[in-house]
Length: 182
Image (cartoon, rainbow, N blue to C red; front, side, top):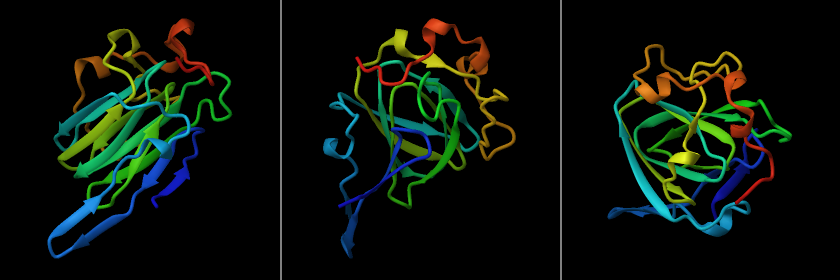
């Protein structure tokens, strides 16, 4: 059985699955639906390759959950609870993922998420909704209210991530509410 622990932010789960190996190699069951009480069936798998120094995010969804699993390299994952009414609303948390250590992270809707590539990396992730541009929202990676420690000093960012609004500037209709799942 994997080790599954609650993170500081409500409903975020960190999974450390069992690894099995011998002289032939390794086997790891990286994801199982039943590990996540708030999760739905994952319907899309994605792969993200980034160079050291890249920052992705912060992104959030009103309806979609993510499950991230690092295959190669190291990343500092930054999470920020945007959900109005959540017991951890406004909380920022970091979790380091390393491809040499089997660890995944379940991110529910409404929790802003991003990562800094501490090395070149390969991230595999699942989502429980097909790509929907209306549900692709963002929060400024350097928002002082978030106060994230990205672990790097000179990030490489996309134009989208450079232009995401600060928390206080997000339109109220685009702020998630705790407990809403559709």
